Length: 366
Image 1 (cartoon, rainbow, N blue to C red):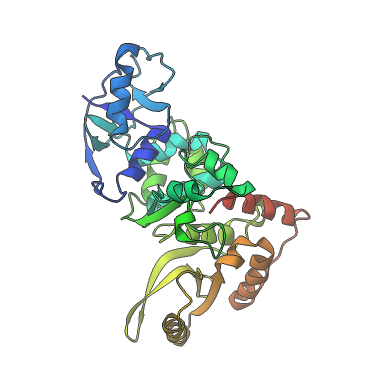
Image 2 (image 1 turned 45 degrees about the vertical axis):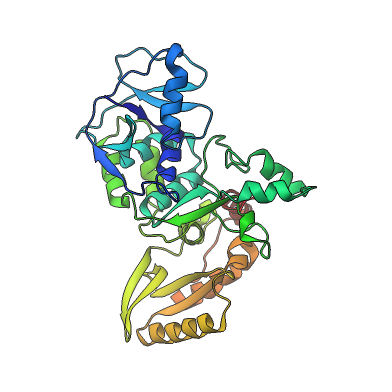
């Protein structure tokens, strides 16, 4: 029998599983849920779960529906609702299990904003995960007088939260510098590569098959705008901004495929965000990685090769992605390539767009 974690606690442990020097492999198993011990043994339970990577003060645990919930300030018990087709629990070791990835996503949706549901969906189905930057606090400690923005960052440095309405979630940070020319060690969190944990089709199938699980309906609404195989959080944000409808502040440019492969002259070529309408490859180009002469030559050769295949290439820089006004100009250019003009007939579109950007790029965030 295992203690079954869920909610934010499971998110923290899933991310920790792929941190440097961690196991880096996701195992699944069948198990029976044990009832958490009473307050007398709460500290032992907490220590057991924290060895799996949980960092928040309050731990979230799923308990059998017919059991009494433990009353303790540091343990939140959630009634376990079984899926209709059984469940393959995530094995964290040390007698700790977690809900299946599909069950976990649906069950956490009620405590997330719509944009956070999108971002978490991209992360679970993508080739990256987000972990705290171990060098961040060391650099922060070296600053004798932190700037005003850094005072907010220092206050939340352990929780990994910046202007996040869900206080113990770590959804909005992406490991890219808040100041374009500052040191990489200033990143509050970083994204690291790992294989996708699930797919959009599996998440949708689970939510449709289990409408009795709280959050399934919210998951389905968000998954309409999530795609598989994003390579970074910034590419995910780019996809969100391009594909959300005008009424949500996006530019309605989809559908798209992430990390799409096309066969070129010298082998397979990878497209960051491939828009099916108009056959356009939209590339995210951070100045951190796209500034060398050699890289620029390779990008030019690649663009010419894709053009020969009938695929146009549009590059979006970090600055253009983060600035909604510059992004609007880029989307007008993209619309001409797609031969599909922007038809924005919403009077307050600019306000809706700015609201979306404030959630994608909250103040003082990466």
